[in-house]
Image (cartoon, rainbow, N blue to C red; front, top):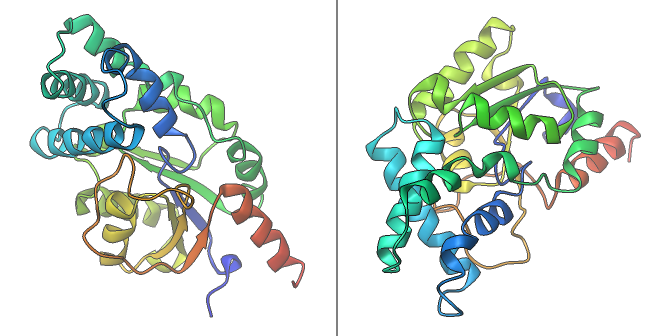
Length: 242
């Protein structure tokens, strides 16, 4: 049976796992959605966002994430028949810096940093992640973004890139515990590379997939926790022999 202490490096999705991107998305879209009234629910907004984000990332994988979000804002405005300015859409594109961390994240990362190397594999750009990193309050051992790679998860290129760079640190796939919320972006492709998966199931009390696409089937999950705090607590208990 696998144990958390079997691994040397935790590779993280950031947005949805460490950063509360659903709250960030909803707050960032408020100038648009406030004009909708009550005719679209929170989850309907998130699922529409997931559709357009995934599509734009697939069609323009070389564009930086703020540009992706700008296009998503425009597509949403078109779907909802709402007039917007390009500056309004660009403001949303630059909103990642305002997205909050989950309350348990920073403390959990600071604890885990004492026991593992910590690496980010994210679908954003370096500038956007830098603002989020300040909220996470830890120094990562590697930060690999879609901007670096030229594609967006769930593309296998992103995992190939990460594993190639981890090999420079002396790490193999067997040393990696890939830790993420999104089944679509992370756990399904992680399975293809034989990576052990840790699901941070932030939406455990909510139906559906929120701001991520339906993965089209349940990938193999080796560990599941409802928060990063629960993950850190489980590791403490394991070390204590509990």
